[in-house]
Length: 335
Ligand code: SAM
Ligand code: SF4
Image (cartoon, rainbow, N blue to C red; front, side, top):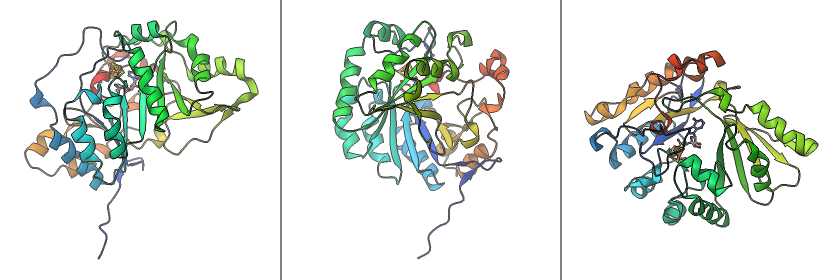
């Protein structure tokens, strides 16, 4: 028997794409200030979005083209009524499964995660202080999320916590986040505040990789150890000597990591985005519904991926609202 040879999903710069992030919904049970526009977003009819079998069908097309890892995201992926069915369906494809969630509903999905071998979970935890966390998320779910984080740790999941670092909001908590890694097997990631449609981005509110590391090194000095990053890692990872957990900084604003990018995105309305910052998208769902072969649409989209941040090569480009506001809002991309 001969094995079918798959030509990898390669762009014009030779980057191979084998990681797909699928956004399951634009809805969310939180309203994080850096993600969801204050006025909310216009909710469209259900027919605009992928149904269960369409998520699975489109995912399969990507897997047939060499995708090896799928991460579910959103909005909040677990608010979809068919989230369990989708996870179960994806677990039958030959991929490594992961999810980014705000953690509120995690306890209800524990058995599904286990039975589907979904062991890698990212949860946003922008503050360890209840009042502050609830202010950032404009809701009151801190206690629930904290207890779900403990649940996942006790169950031995591979857990990453994400915090978007913002001046005057949580920058004074960086050392607390690091202390959180002292006796927990957790990876805390500090994300530079990125511009998306409607999030009132202003870099004076953000903290750079350099500023974050200065705060850490001033206190921990030689105890800060640089860890080896994997080839496609978006974060630079560190560990404090003797600490069980690790931490990292994702520096998409001041030091992008585009040269090793292997990521593609499928939005909840079935569009492929070849970059988090891409301004153009290709509609796969309409073609899929019409029974067309979407392989070439996917290959074309990947081939045309820009070298850096959807064409925003410099910090000045990224800061330019005429460019950065042409993208979607984050809640409808999925991070
Ligand atoms: N609801 C899930 C969650 O909160 O993790 C998944 C979707 S959320 C859009 C995915 C990630 O994007 C989160 O870690 C969030 O912190 C991050 N994110 C959202 N807006 C951002 C921004 N403006 N800059 C940097 N990261 C952002
Ligand atoms: Fe919802 Fe996640 Fe965006 Fe917060 S970051 S509003 S939890 S999608």
